Image (cartoon, rainbow, N blue to C red; front, side):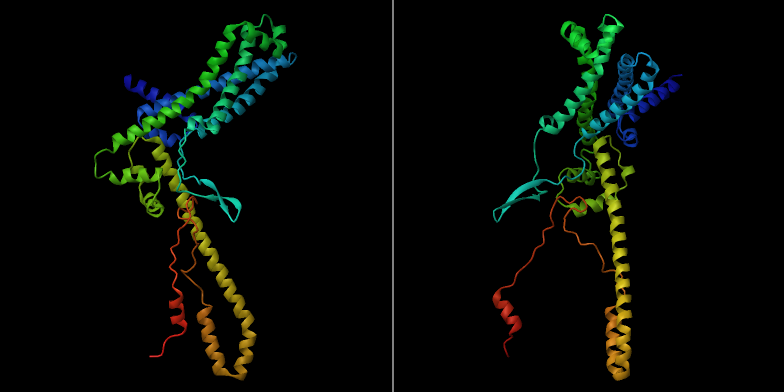
Length: 366
């Protein structure tokens, strides 16, 4: 009985994790504590969906007195719209998992322009950033809107008074303290998943340190995590990610696993793109060579009648020059960390002196 009960609890927990907006495959690989946090997020998402449905239904029932049945489907549509927006906002409240190109303004010849600079790390408090405050403000606004139909339904003296929706809301908020309690409770319920997201970050870091501390075998994985946070050797990092068996890495660091998977997907797709790019260039080269042969054949025919030896010599040279290239076509990379394109490729060029140039063209007679 206890075993079946545990299986039922695990099924419920994973069911709630599915509605958290994060990758269910990665969550299942994490420990119980991480799963609980995501299960709470999923639970609040489901409860907010039910609350949005009920709130919109109450509001629409006051608008369509003679056709209140329409409030149910409209409430479902409104709830789906709000929850999708809410899940999107929750999904964006995550640490940076992929390289981000930093922009800075430089002045050249009296003109200012933006250039990419991946070497500078911008350190700022994400909680006080405009982006974070805007997202949390939007979530709070949705919570305030969501709570008002419940205030009208609970504190309005009669149904007819509830029909005067805006006036009734204003009166209830100014005269009934309980309406503020409901409004704040709904806003807190919508903001709590953000707190759980930040708790997942802290727990994930502690789990990684616990899983891979003091072991020479896992030294490469610790180095890999450091490079993901601050990449200094992109080429070796990408080779390591492509060669790693991600499923064999056992850790409850949720964002580390998610970052590895996202890196792997992007790098594999980019490798496929480069293969297709090279194949396309080879095909274009073959078409160009064929076009050149077609244009040169009439001239070679006339030359053969005049000077067969000269024609044979030119024909051999053309066959050598116009043969199909097999391995020389590769995409040139301007960036050191392609395909993320956050760091410019540094090309070291050694310039010879003027004296060396003169000696090259005017060699002294021995």
